[in-house]
Image (cartoon, rainbow, N blue to C red; front, side, top):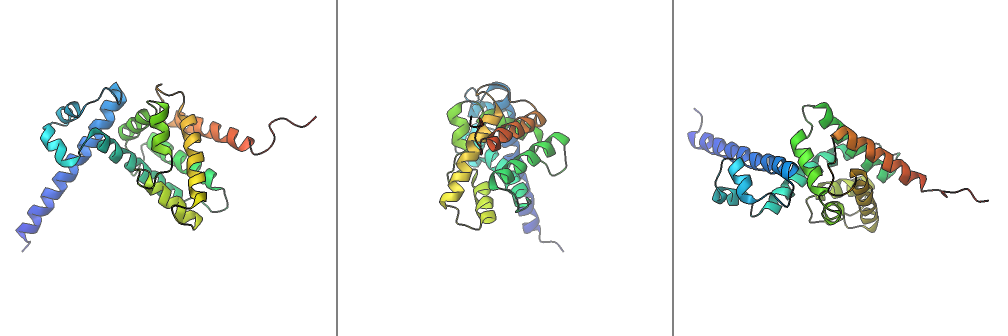
Length: 214
């Protein structure tokens, strides 16, 4: 016979996971609709149909919820990065990985990041220049660490290697530029993918003199 204690524990754990996922989904939706700065913990709790006290059992702050949202996006990008071929540059691999995640969401693929989560993430990081760069810039303890770790594995170096820092911080600028002007609506995933590809094309064009010598 099944162990009733284990069954109860399993049900409780699944309920906790659902509640946590609901909080993150609601936070993403509210931040996308009304802005990161205008969204409060009380609003998130009310929309998730829980009390602020219950909210605090899962996340200590609004920033922690956003961190979970960013980490979710980073895990999808890290998985896509691990699937990229090794005969392309690290910058191109990062570009392809982000494009893969965006287009998978746009197509509604089963394993893709849900649209509301991705949309919320993009709206949040595009809320201001500092917020956007802070989320993409190299920090080993940041929610983007899954991408840093995947990049380091791909390059065969330690996560704190200078080469990883350079690639990651360069990509931070490219990604921030590809999202568009800070504070504006970033658009659908497919539109963002197009802008990132256009930004990357300019970046690669800069690898040689912009103007031919006279």
